[in-house]
Image (cartoon, rainbow, N blue to C red; front, side, top):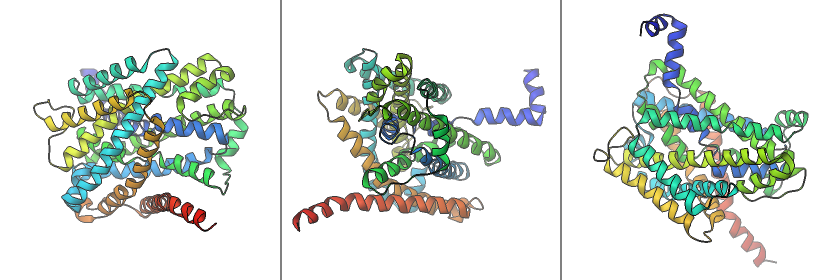
Length: 424
C-alpha cells in the first residue's frame, strides 16, 4: 500500500495509474468492430483485390476515431447514455421506431456472430450443435453472473487475442513494398463492385450499436471530465488496434488467396483456404481469431442492445445490477441470445442472407444515429463548452452524406434495373 501511495505522489506515475484505470471502453468498442461480419468483409476484399484496398484503412481510422470520441465526450459531459439523450431531445415516438429497426438488425448481427463461432469451430472438428449452445451459455453466465470489472478484463483479453491475425499475415509472406505503396497511393476503379467494397470496408467500421455501447461503457466507469484526455488516448489506441487487425486480415488473404485466384464468400472459407499456401498454423490462427472475434461480439452486441433500449425507455440497466434490479435489461439480453442461437441451429439457415440484410439495415439506420449524435453534440445547452470543432463536424457530416447517398442508391437500384429491362 505504501508503494502505491508513493507512486501516486509522482505526477507521471499518477497519470499512468489513472489511464490504466480508465483503459477499456475505447479499446473494447474498437476491437469488437472486427467481428465475424467485419472479418468476412476484409477477407473478401483481400482475396478479390489483393493489397489495392489497404488505403481505405486511413479514412476508416479517421471516421472511427472521430465518432467514438464524440460518444465518449457526450457520455462524460452529460452522464447520460446516447439512447437516453435521443429520447429526451427527439421524443419517444421517434426513439421507438429507430430502436425497432436497430433491435431487428442487432438480432441478425448476433446471429452472424454465432455463425462465426460455428464456422471457426467446424474447422477444428466441433459441430455447431455443440459449439454454439456452449458459447451462448458461457456468454450468458459471463454477463448475468459477472460484474463490469471482470467482464471488461475478459473483453480486453479478447481484444489482445485478435492480434493473432498479425502472425497469420506474416506467415503468409506478403509483399511488404507493395503493401506500403497501397497505403499511400490509393487506386480507384469506377465500377459497382469496387465502389461497393470500398463503401463496405469504410461502413463496417462504424455500426450503430457500437455508438450506444461506447457511451454506456464510459458512464459505467464513472469517468469525469478531468480525465477526458485519458479517454482520448483509450479511443485512439482502440482505433489503431482495430485498423491494424483489419489491415493484416486483408494482407493475409491478399498474399495467399488473391495471388492464387481463390474466391471466398465468408471468413471460414479464408481460414480453410490459407492452409495450403501459408501452412496449417496460419490457417488455425485465422480460425482462432474468427472464434475469438465472434464470441467477443456475441457478448458485446446483445449487451449494447439491452443497454440502449433500457436507457431509452427508463428501465434499469447495467452488468453490475442483479437480475431482480434490472429484469427488463437481462430479459432482453437473454431474448437476443436465445433467438440468435435458434436461427443458427436451424438446418440450412440462410446465413449469408442474414449477414447481408443485417448489414444493410445497419447502413440505413446509421445516418439517423449520426444525425442525432452530431445535432446533440453541437447543442451548447447539452454540451456547454464541449461542442464539436470544425474538423469533427466535417468528418461527421461527410460520413453521414456518403451513407445516405449509398442508402438511396441501394433502394433505387432495383427500380432502375427494372426500368432498364422494361424499356429494352
